[in-house]
Figure (spheres, helix red, strand yellow):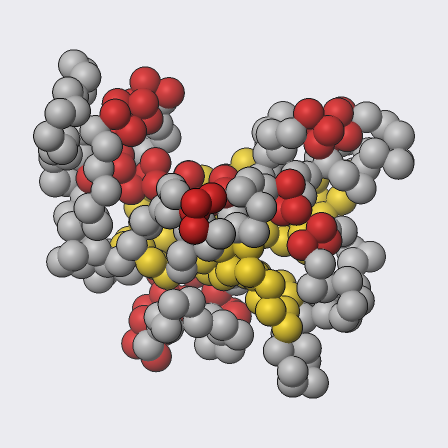
Amino acid sequence: MDAEDLEGLPLSSGGHVLSCEEITCLQAGLTLLKATEKNPVIKFWGKILGKERDYYIACAIRDIKPAYPNKSFFYAGEDFEFKPLPDLTEEVGEAVSMLQLTTPLSGNPGAPLESIAGAEPKAGPTLTELHRLSLLVQEIDFDTAAVPKGAYSLNEAQVVVPNSAFRGLESAKATLLQNYVHFRPPASVVSLKAQAANDLDFQSNFLDSLSDDLPKGCWAVRQEPEKSALVTLRSLMWPGYSAFHVPGTGKFGSVYFGYASKINDLAFLL
């Protein structure tokens, strides 16, 4: 979500909203981050709640091939000074996952991670809450990051760019899950082929569709009865994630507010 959209945040998530003070401080922090990174695409990603303190997360998007959208994530505490989240190697990510941690984050990025009973930590560098925070943000973003289909397109250099011709989904189509995609590097074979192809028939399917997500029913779609007909999508797998789109306009976005807790047994609850 763009910094200028925070004041008119069109949705709350799980009852969580930003206070006026938070909005003002976030806008200042994001503006400073944008100047520091010299990157025009800086978005507010969300707020991860902690037992003692919370984390504010920002996302920078770069048009670097071959894995576009290439995202970098940043975190801030009560000072609203954004710092980069560490890039995790596969080994570090696996080590954090093996600890099988399910408790909420504390809000102290330097706190060492402790495994639950029965999980043996792997030998290696000391793991801190910052490593876990980075892994959780990446996992949430991979499973969510919802945008309307057609909002982005492939240019002649096979790079994903905002679609200047996008005028929004029609109201009737805006409530269909098949008309939303994941704004992150594709994982499905169909999308990977589409991204590599020059055929225009393929280039409308270069991002993974939300309708293919498992388990079926992991998204809840709702359209407001107001004139704007605002459509919201809520992830049941990651409670606290919400995306929105105003049909007939280029207005869309998303935000996460929550404890970064995944519902792993969702398939049995649906």
